[in-house]
Length: 57
Image (cartoon, rainbow, N blue to C red; front, side, top):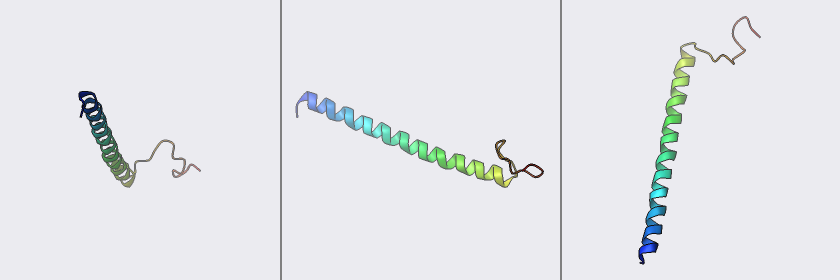
């Protein structure tokens, strides 16, 4: 394998690893944020945009 082909292959491999890591991090963080929202909603905390509060239609 020529040095150029080795360089290109390594660059693509590193890029693929970094992208996979970022996607994994995003998915893990998404689960954590959903869990936090569920805990807040279970505790009675509501979003300001939620118009279904008692006394407000």
